[in-house]
Image 1 (cartoon, rainbow, N blue to C red):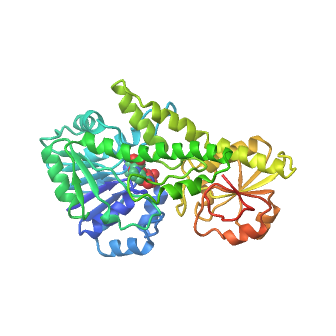
Image 2: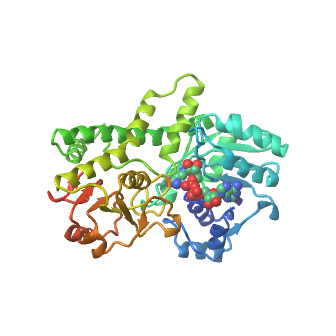
Image 3: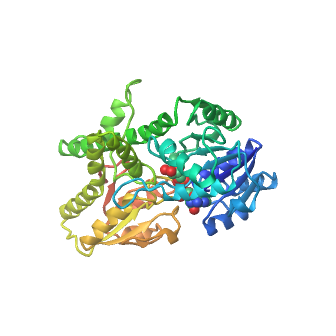
Length: 416
Ligand SMILES: NC(=O)c1ccc[n+]([C@@H]2O[C@H](COP(=O)([O-])OP(=O)(O)OC[C@H]3O[C@@H](n4cnc5c(N)ncnc54)[C@H](O)[C@@H]3O)[C@@H](O)[C@H]2O)c1
């Protein structure tokens, strides 16, 4: 089949390669010029995709990076994988999705399958996406074209076999679900149809907010356990020895990434529309948003215990990415932590070999991780535990370490 995939980011690019590998022809639509050029030169900017993967798909004549779908003939299938952020007032911001839909409306003909992979709130496909598409294209959902939601479940940086991740599919109607299943079955090993697009939309948000709420609970308990002089990491590990009914979540410096911090607002938007906003989600957000402040308090206390004043000290923060072994710094707690440290008069230096320097926009300077940087800093703060950090070098040379990730196993290191 001819498949147009709109948005070539963390979700769209691995999806494009999986679809091409399955033998389809992929029109990889990307609006950002630098990304499009990189794709044309078979240079990957996504951790889970190698240059070799791109070269293979391109040489196989199955992968075509394109700027504008209007320059190409219609596709059989359209998959949309553009960002779905929130507005300043924490409401779903579907403008990028709308513009992707306009692109699809200009291209799609009768019989097309259109699948939204971007995360949206329950009801978005039926009440926002399909009506907008109908207005733009003149085609009718459920008569001329088939609409489904298939939420993406990729976990960037995790070494998982992409095509092995079970794929949820919920169409606007039975035929749409069936059409989407028969397409996705050519790409994924395990396709999981559900009875409606709302179930698929809701399930995705439930999966992610489940994690968010449990991280908040761990953050709360972690702080209390510290007052009780109990290692909460050991508590979680101990509880995880139970073979059923428990899943480990650890406390940390805050929750980042494009997804989790936005997903809570998408879910609460839908819950509020039926008069049932989740108090638990709101509380979880308060707890998680307070995590950077707690990290800074802990660092200040540790410095004071050593008889050091706070003003003018240098802190080396390890990690700008929001999670280990990825280059994605969106909503990373390092930004909030650095702002708070800087507001207290501290000099903040951030080392991260994954995140390109061009992404920098915070109250810190970027430095490489060296013996000198460690030794010259008054404190080292481990926020993101990338595997390539030389933990031995840090341990040998740092004067004070606050470890937010439980990477160091030494009584000389302060644990969060
Ligand atoms: N990143 C993840 O781990 C992850 C996991 C599951 C779900 N999701 C969801 O998937 C969606 C995409 O997230 P992402 O992380 O891949 O975003 P991303 O920013 O990495 O990639 C999106 C890409 O779409 C491009 N784009 C935007 N509008 C476009 C348009 N009209 N035409 C062509 N290209 C356009 C952007 O330039 C960008 O390259 C979001 O809804 C997100 O919540 C993300």
